[in-house]
Image (cartoon, rainbow, N blue to C red; front, side, top):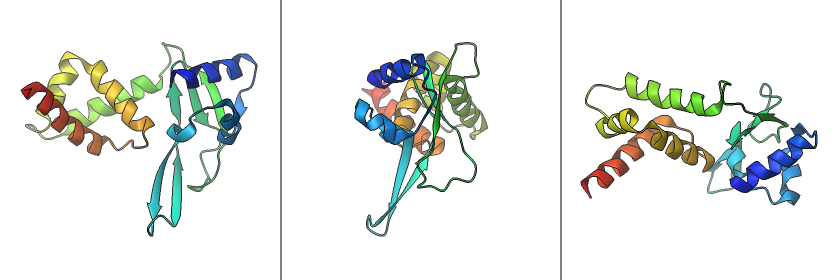
Length: 154
């Protein structure tokens, strides 16, 4: 991920703002974080769900979000994210916060405890999960709850 930030920084500083993911391959950019993948019929058909993704201070944001099918190869716009912007960290933190606040009382107690004590840990875990291809908040919270319970009981 650190290498991706360096590559995006070079492109951004060189004035290259619009890019297709395939243009990143020669630069040894791991672009698997740009999409989630779902295979059907024993792997015969694979659908790609493209998404915006942040690498350090740089955001790859889809230029044409509407009208794309799942397997289209989108254009991305490289943006530099300032701390004061409504950046992906804030958006992800809000997703976690809203999910935990909207959950029934008595559920996800360990995640709620961590959210109060050290929300940055939850944010970091959630963003790592997103980079691995899944941004389902409900699945992630359930998995994280079990993991944190194991950590706390050890």
